[in-house]
Length: 260
Image 1 (spheres, rainbow, N blue to C red):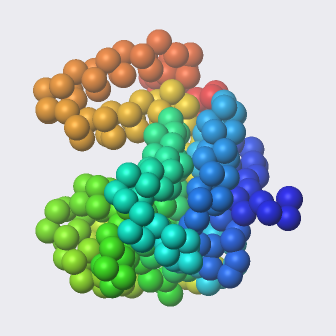
Image 2: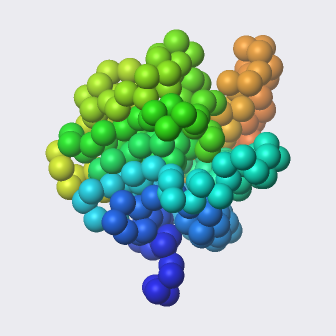
């Protein structure tokens, strides 16, 4: 790993692990965002990766938030410059969310501001019991700018999302699970291993079926029910053309293990 490399990834069988390593708290800045974008693009181009995990280096933070030391030069410079800054931070998270394979956040420490927004861009979130998560930007007189206002409301509902962003409150892992912000709460130092278990289980399945499930859910949220059902039917038609579907269906009918 290069000295100034703050985002790196590894692959084991069909699972990739992305690690944010910007000590001491893995904060999000332009350099981290650009490196994350490059990393996601590399993973996207690898057809042998079926599932992705995102985590933070060390034990203190998944990603503690944005790099506030980079904010002062943006004060009072005009709307357009700040807008471009926000879009640049959003870009890697958009790419991560749009990956055509499942993405799991292994939240092993603070996930505040940009860290919460990074977790929100993932499909599944595993949180260790000691973590705190939230969008506290309002306490600085600003607002979430890397997707928080949009993704949190879609995940937990408008009213609860507004409450969390209006107050800046931090949630415990159990509170986050209660409102549907995280899927599972696990013991300290266990998020990555549990994420690996889930990712390995996912990676046993058909890539095409996984990608089409993700598309149906994500794109279907912006469609009418009738339009979503049409898309679902078309995706089902696609997966029925694969050898994996043929083997899986005939194995079931013949009461034998599938040879996938």
